[in-house]
Image 1 (cartoon, rainbow, N blue to C red):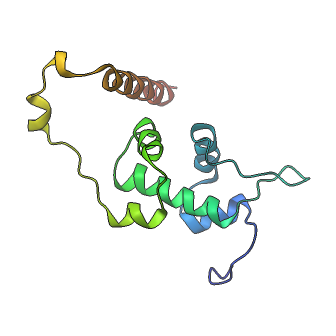
Image 2: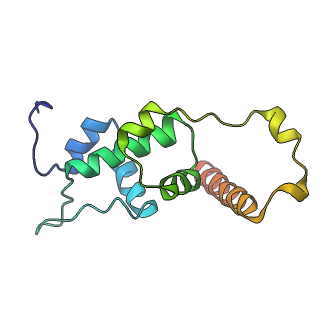
Length: 132
């Protein structure tokens, strides 16, 4: 398929090739991000639009390049409506280990604890999958 030609709708296999992501990753992200909900055609196949592909590329950048967790990406996306080009032009730096060492347990607010609990749950789920 020539990627220079724009189409109205793309199949999951086409989106997989365009984004460099496996189809199962795209399906999983649909369950985690309400913004990604491609409609299905009469045959039940997903029909992605360009805006879906742009959102997937944004997610890929947040999760793979900027190393956000799924919960962290949700929070980042909820902060404000983000245009795809803004994310690519504004690198976000993670706090260093030294910054984290200066923070006492009392200073960690409940939202951070919630995020950390979610990260732990995600890691435990990954560990469970790996142990199968």
